[in-house]
Image (tube, rainbow, N blue to C red; front, side, top):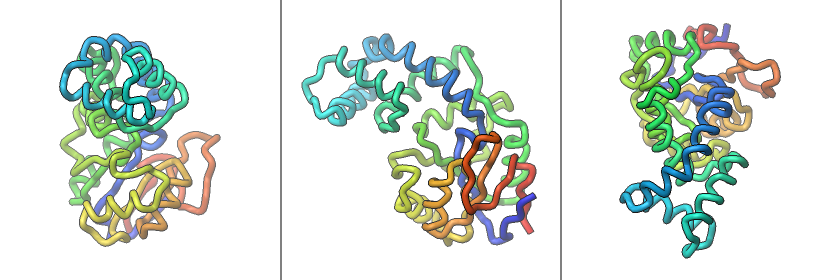
Length: 231
């Protein structure tokens, strides 16, 4: 059991490998987006929100005149390579929205996560999410989760538009927006480099090790949210 300082007033949690199974993301969400992306883009390419994202994709490709087929090919390659490009993440979120709403799948959340999020929220701790998935995708996972709609527990959401998750400046940006002292914020993740960056920004950190193959570093370790207590 890992104890964290009572001064904690906010918790920022990662999703993949922390609140939710890595397998759900890689074996359900990613394949669904890859399968449905071509039809989605062709159907909605002229819709304002999608058109803006496709323009961003072309800019990132450095091919402003790329045709739709080239854009689709690039997006599918980015999915395959797990490229955390903001316009891709936003498009995936829109596609997943259709999947959640049609009940093609529900968002996986570990049982220990839901009960502890509720407990921490009741204790007056502000809870935020920081994930490489878009804010829209984050909200959908928790709205359509196996544990019911959990979105009311969260004070806010951050994605890669705040910054890359292994960059110290990203956590400084979060600290500024949360408007607390760095040591009053606890960051939860399974990734050592993310925890290193958060610690360098002054946050407290705990690593979730749900998988025996997870690489560990110098951070406090728990195997589930039940093991996190506040002294």
